[in-house]
Image 1 (cartoon, rainbow, N blue to C red):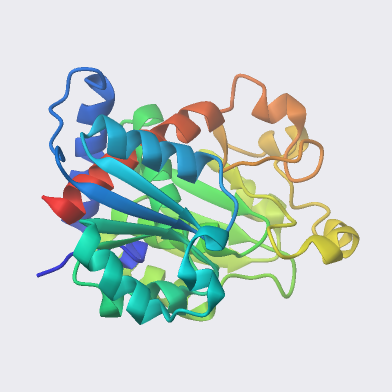
Image 2 (image 1 turned 90 degrees about the vertical axis):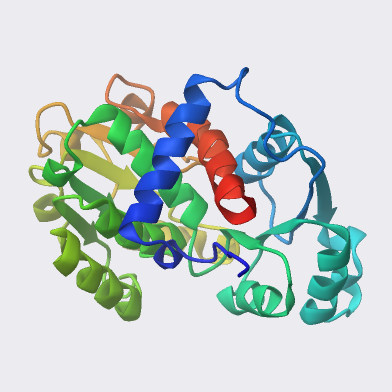
Length: 305
């Protein structure tokens, strides 16, 4: 049976924990681990710009012994009218897996539906499961007992927020609290699913419009850019609506002692997070970014081996 990784919800509690343990092993022995994907080829389709996803997956594929085939929209027929299923069928004959960074989640699902090889969602408008996996790994490096960790996400209820809700519940965090401006809350279906998972794992899920209440006592304060790709024309309006929802030095004072700050990058210092926070001692951002590499390897292992 072909394994796809299209959503954080594709994993069981045990599978997510196993993938993170694998990523930790690969991180410890980065230069010595076996090249388990020797002789394989992985297609990487990028319909959106990328830094961390592109580099982490390309390096991961190479260090695991496989060959990355990077395809941008202007380089493939997919950008000139070829259907997604036809692209999936052709790439399935050439490659061993497909990594895609795209727009609607339906494009990822359609690709996986026609492919006979694994498909990995490297970002869609609905979810960012690879990011959330690296986030859970990073939190696990900082806190010994995840069941006592309260995660607070401030800002836009976007793809990153959706995957954090699901992955946080799968990890059995104590809490995942989201605070977003009115009209920018996460998808109700995702919240309901995370809540259902949390009922099994002991994770409490909450969504509010009160950043201070959500941040109070949190062990992890997490945010993302307020103006993501595709929203540039609304930048000024969004900056006004999101005021008060940043990870600032002030909001950090409401967090628990020893709390860390996280951001999936790229960052706009002085908007969604203060420079003093992201560049200060509470920041786990650079470990978080590095862990995209190690979790990418674990994802490839999971779908291919």
